[in-house]
Length: 336
Length: 256
Figure 1 (cartoon, rainbow over the protein chains, first blue to last red):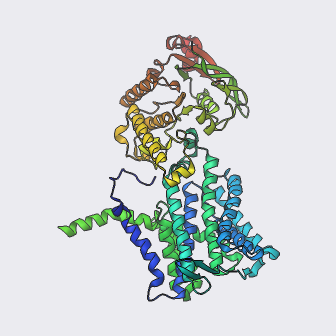
Figure 2: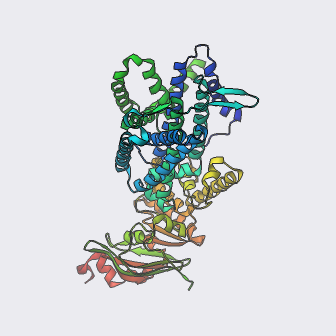
Figure 3: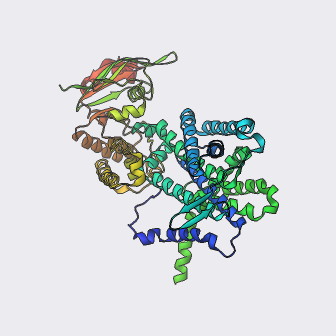
């Protein structure tokens, strides 16, 4: 549980009002007068990474610092793409199957890796990520190797009675809504799990596996569960993005993207559910805005990372927390 | 005498060439309170770790309610109904006192993963009941006022009481307390002893490791160990005047 004190029950409108407004605004983004395909692309990118980073945080709250998360996005993406291309299945199904594929791999590897803790766990997930990327790059007959997979069937034209036809090939807007829907669903489910007893068990294991075992929590079971849940949504993000992008290559799922996911999360703040969302928005939007300077992006990332670690170890979301008393003071002074 | 709840026979644990526990026999009956005593390094905590599955016995058996539990995983042993505290105040530092206890109800409802995700009404009812029971347990150990304090911000004494509350939350048939008053000051010890008395009044069987003689006097039966071997067993007065016990604690010369 993230709540450290019992809050008086608020009316639903006050509790969820602001959230509702934000979600409504997100649905209105494509209707902006300044809308253009590029803005849509950045938004879709952000939604994809919000899914991936939030699901990574789920793994982290169970005390498992995975550094191979992008590999599971890749497994989802390749599974889904290959099923659609080779077997001709509709992406509507294969997106889900991609996520299931990533989960299956996660259950097996998560079980094997659950023997290791802390940095050793990070190391094997890192190596696993590198190995998966190498596999994607080298298995040319299946994955197209270095040049990647191209020629997706696309999402086609969806005909919903009463709404009309939605042509996914015509613009990026339908993809935006698809990704928005998936991202919101992901966040809702992850939030619910985190606030349930399962989430509590994860945090308990992260704090002390010894104590957790003494009260009957199976460390292996709950760690594998967290890993599987996290990788399911990573796979979902990867496969949905693959069908949007129409091209996938192994380099999108290599070590660097995995590390970026960790950086997004750390910058946003791991202790907060909103942390990954904030981190992704800040770190995906900024490089896209200064696209001409893109080759310097790793330097900027590195610099930001150092600043975060030294100045605000709780991340941006944690910054709001520590500034809250200050805001309150300023507000009180304002009233006087 | 009532039936044996826990039966330890020929229990042996070697760490390399060192026999931390050797050929220990010990029986705990239902409703009893048994003290496990001995100088530092006698193997008391090792016995606890062997019972709760943190260590695997080299030889011997641990039978709880007629079932062999030696070598089972700790969370399985906990599910059998053995609660324990540790020698040090291990707890969930980032959880509040109340959350520490609530989290320890993991075994109680056998809560389903999806139930929690969908926050069903039966799940909510269960959690409300757990909240009530957790508050009662905190009252039992006398921590009801510290409910909202983070585990890491508690002083040492209340931390140890909290670990006791946590062990109680799994509704143990057998409670193993490893130095429940270790490191506490005088008032805290009094407080802890009355908490243990209240737990005992509920009918929970207790085995405790302790150096504090005030608490030991309170045990019905005491097992004394030295260098991994049981050297005496009996009531407080019997054990206190036992020659080998005196020798283990005070050395040969003083006795003679």
